Length: 569
Figure 1 (cartoon, helix red, strand yellow):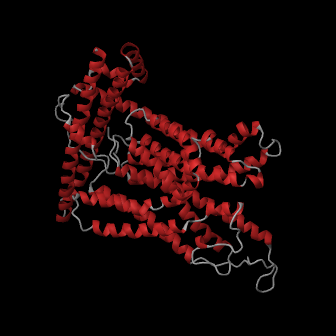
Figure 2 (cartoon, rainbow, N blue to C red):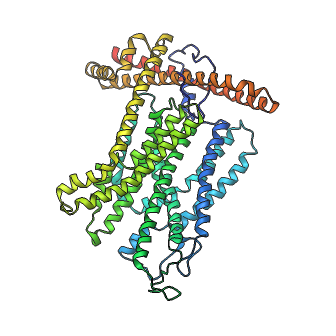
Figure 3 (cartoon, one colour):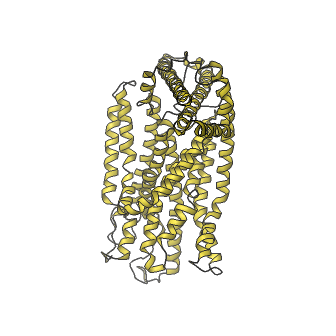
């Protein structure tokens, strides 16, 4: 198999076959492998992760600069529009509650700037450290947390205001995340990786969208209304009458452009999250399913925070327009839980996963761009088309009735998402089929080595129905403890097969890349030194991969012993 592994995948030696299987009682290797090896620590990974974070911060600083240099359309405007407070705004009541949901907390804003300063200072320390120093890895992740984690303050501000709503959204979101995890079938991502993707969407992605778009709205508003009198007078400075119809039209155009900006920022933030997770975490397989699952988990996290603020918003406005927070909960946490941001995040992740398997840079860029364009277009279309459909049917259907609540409103909201959801399901189906074929090859190869998988166990591992039948039969004959032990054993065997698949892919790709780069590396001494450094890292990573394989096999053998003991008893 010659698919390209992900960026930062450890490169083993040319022989993917590990040493002989250790005895079942050899548990120290497993203990070592189980502790603290979720995160990568090679220099290339650190550089790429920091580059991604620097791009995000660079765009944010550009947003700040554009907002500060915007045209001022009202008297006494502050340097940044996020600090604006309208004179005479009531201190209490519906309008104040409404405004507090969309206001930028000054503490969060200054916290982001402080995080940028801390992140820059940590990077200055990192560059003075040797490339193989483990402390550089710790400081790198600390710098990433300072640069990007501070955006979570915007989300935490919203979630802290509505703790009961947060608790109400936890069960449905947890169930959806479990279903997303189960969709992988083979080559499962580590659970901390999936939870981190959810947290990225709920805290950082949502916070980035809020921070960027609030600045963008003030900037867009300034340029849209430049030259228009907004002080309440019916004439401009020259005595000409002001056309308020034109002013309202500008307001709608401002909202449209802001919506496009928000959709773009959200999907770019989702892409950043998927890329960072692939770079940071060690895992078995990277393909379209990996990217799709990570993107969907990040989108689910975004939907979690968005649901809290939407439910709170419609609850506040219920006295003005009759809307209810309960209906918003039904739409966002039930009827369309797997739609909207989950679908669009999955599209972004699928594009990144496909790009990770492609050798040519132009194809990688094209796949990532296609995923982003589809997700951005889908997010904008979801808002625009659903509003248009709602306007068409409102004259023919009673608002708030049972039919409208249970059928018509969810259908209107989901209709624009159906094409994108269909594409995601087709990509998932195609990716799972490819995984099953690769799993069959890996399981049979591992069975030939012996130890963790035997020839008789191959059909059971490759057929989910047979695995389930084996579990049920074991439960009925030997009890739940034996069934649980058998399930753990089967998962451990599939982990071993996934490890073998990863090593074979990485070995084939390393051999191909080495053949292409060897003539270039011999041209200059500088490139020779770089190649020697890279080879040293590859040897270290190959040793870690072998130890990981030994640990996985030892665990499978230990679980085999446990199953035999329980079944025999």
